[in-house]
Length: 324
Image 1 (spheres, rainbow, N blue to C red):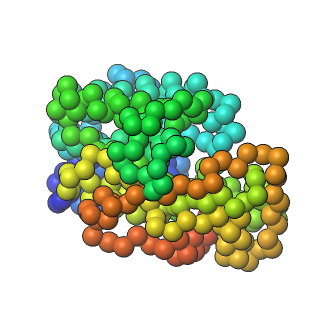
Image 2 (tube, one colour):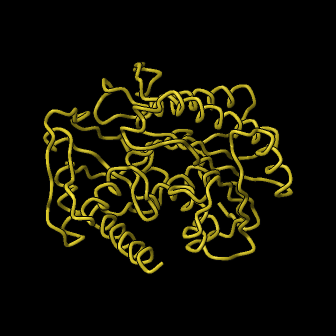
């Protein structure tokens, strides 16, 4: 797909995933409207100055603000990439489940409504592999989702992704909208300063603190580098072959081995403690990646290379903060 001369709106455009969409869309020649709630000068500096990037600060919960931004910021919007979401680590999700479900659903509804009124050609709603039930097959394919394996969870984030996908289905049927739904596994990479497992481990290891792992640490997880997620999603738009695509890496790693790899890359001692009294979560979950491999024209980076890239960014960012 030729992005030159096209306009894309990215919600959460200064966030971890959204900023990488902004960066890659700019690199492909697009005009990008970056919607953000929080100022992040360090991310803006990394994106660089260009006349093709417009930053607009607003609250996506305010439907009138969003509608005005989409109507007046550009003559036409060709694509909306919705990355903004209220998220956090496991403890945050447990404590704020109702708020997460409520806000994420209202934001998704506002984004879809604005895109429908502007007759946007392509809408991306970032989902998650958390929509899959524990009873789903291994590896789990896109059709093995909550429609086939319905399950209740008190995880407001997972529920918000399920209901957002249902909302997408209904908008496709009622309004004929083209909506793409990537379902990534655990995303990692540069600019991730949130509560996900890799940045959390990096901060503790760099500070000389213990990394506490729930359970025996043998539970395995798969990861996808943020740039590979972006490239796959743009391939979904270009091919429009599958409305929903699992996005992940072929390699799985145990949580304790992940901590050891990060300690080695940082040159820090392996200060790891297992908390056997805490729940470890699922023992492992693999995604069926056949759809993804069908549409992409690149080889996703190995976890080894992606972790090295992430640690290099982390150390550079730490030096920048220390200098400031």
